[in-house]
Length: 423
Ligand code: AMP
Ligand code: GLY
Image (cartoon, protein in one colour):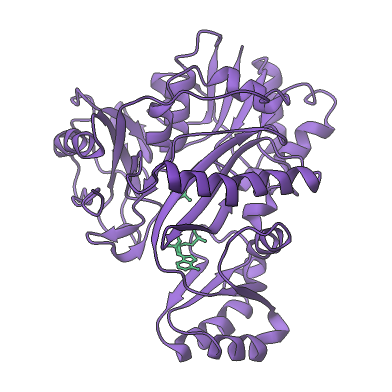
């Protein structure tokens, strides 16, 4: 089977690494990919918003299965494009259609969905551009800190958490007057929840699902969970507090009702459902849905899948997941994200990376790298994810930290405290 993965980050490298091990794989392509994916697949140059070039690639390389990494092409309707094109409609497609992708593409859509299906989430209200004053009054009825979310996709910058009421009221006004264009034409204001976050993933065919290994992502740039939010500074799996009892609650109170809702509403949802959860006094609440895998979570989730993932992806795309289960690797996995100095604010690209080939005991996933005249260089804020196995997440982290030292470039930074908050 010929497979195409769309995307260019560490998530897609981890997916490619896993799919490349499948005995039923013929050829693997990644578009556009990165120097890491080039080690296990053939990279094809392409913009993910350019659907007609994606079509050309699929036809030219006789692609039978497409796996979409990031959310943007899904929210822009890539699945619909495939379903409606007679030359593509037979291609197996892992990713929800445009309507179902609203679970991530619109915070208000997701909130209304959760309300309809009784899924635990923070209390909220949504305000439109002409409702600034009503929104400010709603803020005044809540307690600090205040959580404001641009309704649409805002490249990870659309969530504000503010301590002062005046600041929050000002921020609401700025958002609603178009700070993120159409994405902040509506703003969700919600109650602040206190607890530890957890990422849970399901793979679904729209009716049935399998759960993938859970993971914990470290979002803040600074040690001790301080400073600005990032795309993710590392991840571990399994997550110690997500014991059988907690995961049963997650499945009963969150995953099963979400899947039932997806089915009851007739959504065309094939692919990954990412439940961004928070553990509030032992009970799971949904912070957000994403219609794709997480990054860097994928860099620990894929290594912990103990069987061939390709038949499962085929089953998800073709309505065949009923009765399927998934074996997890008994070992723990951890990934440490090495980032460019200055990230998530301004940073430079094009610094020469050394030592990336010198890392036995770990798997190096490329996130933001490029090859320039044969040398490996930085090409993004998040540059390389160093993943390791261990008998515990702490052993796995130790190995990743050992190898994180060996990889270098000017200004490299990583958090050295991953896992310290967990037993
Ligand atoms: P999101 O883009 O929805 O994942 O939000 C970004 C981050 O903001 C989350 O990962 C949480 O750390 C935080 N966050 C979002 N909503 C809430 C909430 N209701 N209470 C506490 N923290 C939140
Ligand atoms: N690691 C969080 C995300 O992928 O959104």
